[in-house]
Length: 122
Length: 312
Image 1 (cartoon, one colour):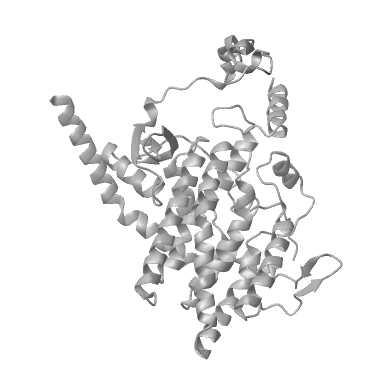
Image 2: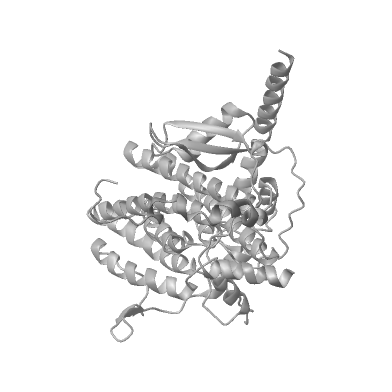
């Protein structure tokens, strides 16, 4: 028996054999719960940091789900949940021009300045 | 234009710059990732079933608590991965549909039954062990959200593997019946475990592409060999054996030689003819259908509360 073996990876059983060649993304979500972005403060004194996202019907459920999904091992002392549609992001294609003003200003960094070795505590 | 974008894209990959969801990417890269990440997520979710089978029958309260925690972790892993896949433009419901309709696959290993308590030990040691071997390099996958999800997963998998080995270690110090049960579990799970790494390497253009895109960094055979080398030593600590008469240390290669894998069985299980394919999918579909009213009720409740807030 001969197989047309293609390269397969863990969690990836290939296209030919599983009939999933066309992963269609028709973008017609049904009654899906909205998506939330979750931010976690790992301990007092630190910033909230993006941990990931999840689905929940409302904010209270988002926080409870975030507790179960992202803090099963005491990873957090505080949770922020923001519905994903309210996140505004810069556009990757515009990164060049957006950050251009900072590009040529090395003098904003302390290492730009050559000081004699005798100078201490600076 | 397209060509130029692809050159820039490949250049980023070569420089080990991670690709993020809103960045330009070749359509094939996006589809390959959606398929791989969603199938990985499905594997975590289906993977809860064979172990969930033993929660009510765990031999002690301690083991029961550990098993519940582990199964909960698997659910978490599935959720991290579904979220990562969603950043590529597929919805959660679409992924569920693909799983439930049989269009998307999950790891063949979860289509084998968990017959005895020792299976919980072997699933942790071998199945999670093989998963870790595969997943550690995925922490450096070129797609940012996948790599970040895998970092979380790997941190947690380590407990899974160790608790499994400990179950077997305790059994290995037990009665003759317990030792027999453990050896039997190893015998049943060994071959399916090493099949988890997928078919043998070949020269397919697909593989070259995936390696070039750094979606994955080691070949199936490299990882399988590494896994076999590790397990062949670990099994000695347990005083059990691996069911492969050809398993032998090869001084020259610096690796263990091993016997021929039954690929026919592998493809049969992938094709849906494994011992538990139908049972697993039916359980999953039932859970989804039974939860329908809960999802609808939560949506209705949220809408009602939102309306109240607006009115006030």
